[in-house]
Length: 110
Image (cartoon, rainbow, N blue to C red; front, side, top):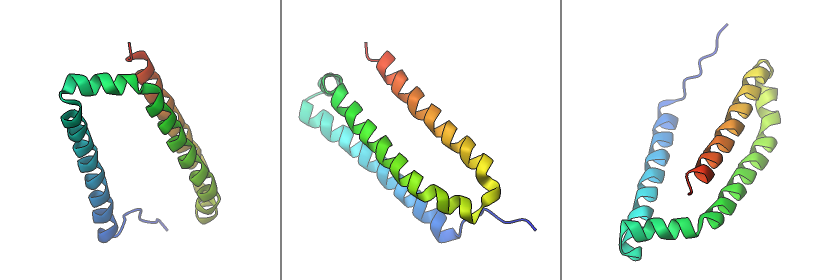
């Protein structure tokens, strides 16, 4: 017996709508920042000056995601015990992605 991993149509559309809304908010925030700063160069300078503030924000975001995942993980493994290896691979992939992303930002800073 195989199980289908397809989400119901409304869930797929909800995920798409949330993702689109987040992208629009990010774009609007950048455009507003450039408008307030006066130019894209001034906005870039402001972002560079506040690099450590944004790094602290991202660390808090990563920590909260890890906290909620560690609370959710036992329920996922209870529902699908055969998925333990896939879950472990996903966890390591996410960790490498976060570390690589942060290292790239630190190296591109100068």
